[in-house]
Length: 372
Ligand SMILES: Nc1ncnc2c1ncn2[C@@H]1O[C@H](COP(=O)(O)OP(=O)(O)OP(=O)(O)O)[C@@H](O)[C@H]1O
Ligand SMILES: [Mg+2]
Image 1 (tube, rainbow, N blue to C red):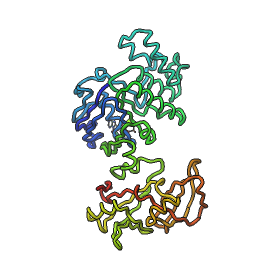
Image 2: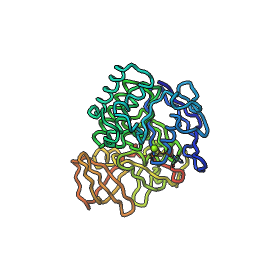
Image 3: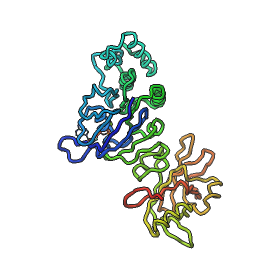
Image 4: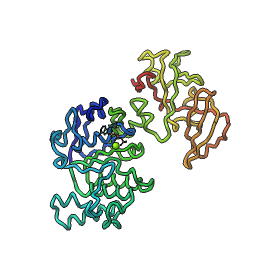
């Protein structure tokens, strides 16, 4: 078990000009479960592979525990890795694949057997222990790869999309198993995914990445509620956050946010921030999640000066909720999440209240969150 530290780490592949990872600084706590989240090609696997020692570090330093590992070969780093493309030994059975790392460490045979059987039970692959990898489905192979990693207690687990080939139900189940394992073993873990639900539910902290650059490192709650920029705001959330372009103006002593279709009065705190920053006539983007707008009476009572008139274009009913797609005066469209009991017909004219305390304002050019 160990703390993992990345200091100004960059990666350049061969002669490619653009860096795959740019100036990464990250301090991962001992026993932490840290998630790398970001779109395809943002540098998640590259970073993980540098920690594992499978890629050279172009610049910077990586520490595992107290050891600078830049020049230490992978086998001496005491890490256990699950690859994105599982890389099993094709000529070994499932049992032998899982046992491999223990055998080369000369662990007694009965201990190996116990460990393999325990892992196989957790991963529901006990029935396939005698098969070769080619005789398994993709999802089964992926679980064998996971099994091979979890039979030992290394300094760190490095997992690269270990659940990507599983069906939805198995994925939820394995997600819970991995967390349970983590709680019981307490091994520092870096977990790569591009699935934001996985990141939110599993991570102690999430590192959101884009184009090789860290965008934000925070707890799931902070990432969800206080995204540092519009990229993070867009990347997190089941339904996308609503964005409105508009201008901050002071009228009759109140600071309001004006779009082409409507205007909303800011909370006192937001108004003070805009005043302190002298942001009159300032162009911003307002972000608000679908669950922070609604039709409930209390919302209208709390925010009487932050309501929007709109037409209901269509309704996505997903069982637990309605997602209403609305249009305001043909100029702004947005999505509102509502309770299944709140029924409106398509084409209806409605008024929606905005939970302004949840509204976020971003600079229109830099796309950074405006904060006090
Ligand atoms: N061996 C390589 N040679 C050159 N460029 C590479 C190599 N491996 C990766 N890259 C590039 O580095 C960038 C980061 O790749 P990486 O595999 O780390 O992305 P990722 O975040 O893991 O994406 P995915 O979610 O698709 O797995 C990409 O632009 C990719 O094209
Ligand atoms: Mg990858």
